[in-house]
Length: 130
Image (tube, rainbow, N blue to C red; front, side):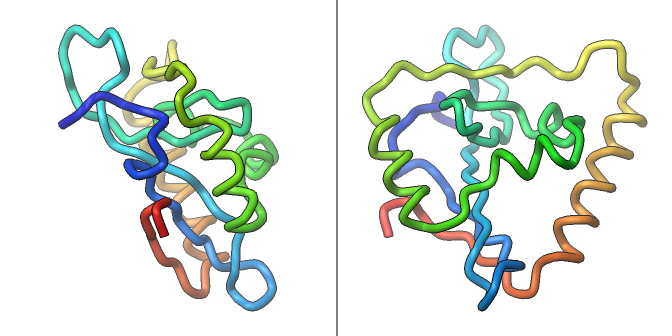
């Protein structure tokens, strides 16, 4: 598994499909290990609108409102953001939420997944190259 990068070709854009017509909002994700990692253990990361990659299990611990603020409203917004981010150093937070038991993290993960799935009518995953 390769290192996390800001290369749009490595990003997956997930259409959550609950907006009008099933187009958006969108979540950008990527699988890899954080730069500087000593264990090279691949993780799934979610791209934040500040350009920081957040490990998905930390993302699900965010309040629902904070999660939704990280969603992109159009494919154009995603592509422009990725283009601007391309070539910049990767900023990644690969730390699991501190002070939490794995059962609690997985409970939040399940709640987040269920909320997203309830809202999705047509979810598709595409490469950012498209």
